[in-house]
Structure formats: C-alpha cells, structure tokens
Amino acid sequence: LSELIMTGKMDMALIYTSDPIKGVTLEPLFREEMFLVSPADMKLPAEPGQPLPLSALDGHAMLLPSKAHFLRRLIDEGLARARARPEVISELESVPALGAAVLDGLGSTILPASVVLETPSFSGAQLHPLTTPVIDATVSLCVSDHMPLSEPALAARSVLLEIVTKLKSGHHPGIRAI
Image 1: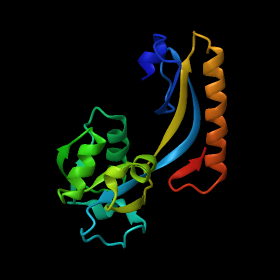
Image 2: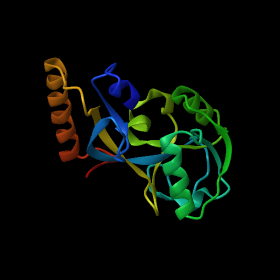
Image 3: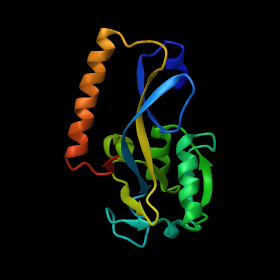
Image 4: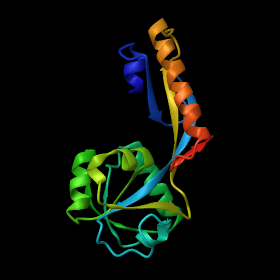
C-alpha cells in the first residue's frame, strides 16, 4: 500500500507499521492486539475469551501468514520471546481461507483483533487474547511525503481521525492508545 501512496495512486492508507518508509509519512494512531483463533472444540488451557500465554502454543498446530507478511514477523518475535515453537502446518494469506481452515479443525491462527472480531469467517471459533508477551502492532496513517492531499482526501482524513479518537476513548477489545 505504501508504494501506491508513493506513486500517487492512493491518497492514504492504514497500515501495520510505525517504522519509517521512504517516500511516505506515517502517523501512528493506535496499537492493535493479536488474538488466537481456534476451532470451537479445541482443548486449550484457558476457557474461550480468556487470555492465553504464548507459551501454551508450543507444539500447537498453527495456520499462519507467510514469512514475507509483516504480521508473521510480529508473531514469530512474540513466539520466540515466549520460547514457544508451534507446528506451522500451513501458510495462508486469505482471511476467508484461514477462517475455513480453522473452523474445519485444521489448527489455530493468530490475527489482529479487528480481523477476528469483525469478520464473519471466524463466527463460531474460540478466541483468546494472547499474553506473556502480548503481540500487538502499531496501526499508522500513511500519506505521501511529497504530494499534498486533495480537499476530499483531507475531509476523509478528518473523519478517519475522529473515528480513531472515539475508538481509543471507548472500550474496544484489542485496541490500545499509543
């Protein structure tokens, strides 16, 4: 997405990073926690909805994004800190495919709160916030550092920032202020 913004094909995007990217300006907005998503009947050391330490995933069958994906780097870093080595049985990028695989009982996945809580693909799965350590990602507004925003884009940015302010001030699972 940052490439589309650099080339002027997009005005702005919300992306998972706060690390500098040449050609764009990033405005960190909030941090989003990752959740474990598992088949409804899977036996885990915590009841559905309850926090689960990452160490509980040692040897656990996992369906994860590919190593090229930003979220996979966060997941791998968190698992390494917890000294957990799950069994990655498949790498999938498609959210609907991940949902189908989890609901079919093939394994669990780790995804951002917004994806898990707002996507019908995971209806019926058990969800766990992850702890010790928490895996979270900074969500930033990405805009070009050399092209000004048009008036409609400025209006959209204003509405977006208003929504983010409301999200941060209310209780929304998995979303934390920076």
